[in-house]
Each structure stands twice: as structure tokens, then as C-alpha cells.
Amino acid sequence: PDTFDAVEASVNIFPLQETSPVKPFTSFVLNLNVSTIIHKDQGDLKGCIVMVIGDHKGGKLCLFKPRLVLEVKNGNFTVFHSQKISHFNLHYKGVRCSIAIHSDKTGISYQKDCNGWAPSNYVN
Image 1 (cartoon, helix red, strand yellow):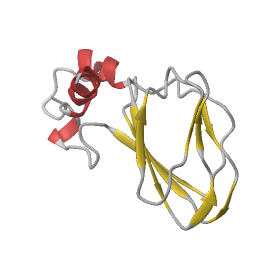
Image 2 (image 1 turned 120 degrees about the horizontal axis):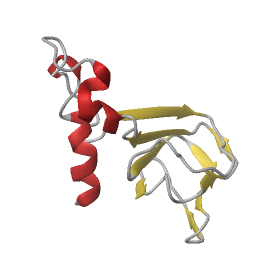
Image 3 (image 1 turned 90 degrees about the vertical axis):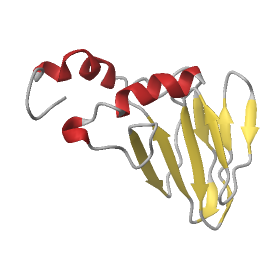
Image 4 (image 1 turned 120 degrees about the vertical axis):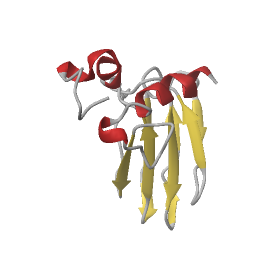
């Protein structure tokens, strides 16, 4: 619950009162046919959701510290702290798409003063 409360605070103050298609998160990344090297997403705020789509074999998601290897098939998703846990995916055959849904840490500065635009008739 704390994770979702923290990320929803960012999406509730989008410019021009717009919202996010992945609310309560602010952003998503579409990775088409990508194998990643081990990394942490330093720009992410709290957790992320990764959903996998496609007709493929392999491509397991590896979470380094907890020593987990997750078989994520078409339509499966997982939630983890991408900023804290090193992760990568294994090679695969076929077509593989992952959608990483997350919120960016830079939203915290926007909450304070709308990145210098507050007060404004255009940014609330």
C-alpha cells in the first residue's frame, strides 16, 4: 500500500489536470525484442510492474539479490523494487515485448513547486 500511495501522489498533479494511462504510476516503457544486462533503475520511484507479451521461449526475468529466476510468459506480470534490486532478462527465441510500468523520481521535485512554474494558471 505504501508503494502505491507514494507513486499516486505524483500522478495526481500532472500538468493541465491530465492523468496517466497507467495510474497510479506516471510512466511506462515498451521494450520490444530486448535482452537487458544486469541493472537497477535508479530513476524509478518505489516499485514497478513488468508485464510480458509475445510468442517466445526463454527470456526469464532474473532478480539478482533475492536469487529469483521468474518464468514470465505471455500475459504474466511481476512487481518488484526496480530501484533496489538488480535485474535482467535472459535470452529468448521468438517475439517478446515487456511493458515496464513505473513512476519517475523526478516527480518529487515537481510536487514541491511544479519545477519552478508554481503558482501558475497553467500548472496546478
